[in-house]
Image 1 (cartoon, protein in one colour):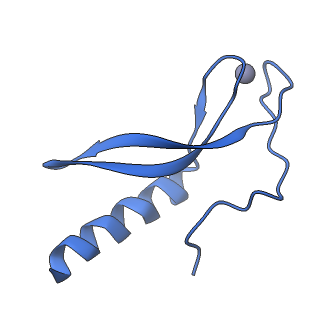
Image 2 (cartoon, rainbow, N blue to C red):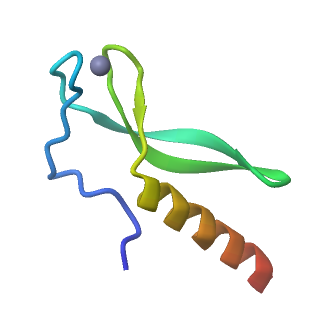
Length: 68
Ligand SMILES: [Zn+2]
């Protein structure tokens, strides 16, 4: 079960050649706003979202909402 981004993995922005930083980003989904940790380039502020990661996060959020 992945619950956070592996910070040991060296992700680098293709454009700037800068190491990406993990940062909390607000995401709007359905009726609410959520904060998720995403990798972001400190140079160009481009946010990198793995499609399966984003989907997994959203599904987790959705599931936790349904449980309540
Ligand atoms: Zn960049």
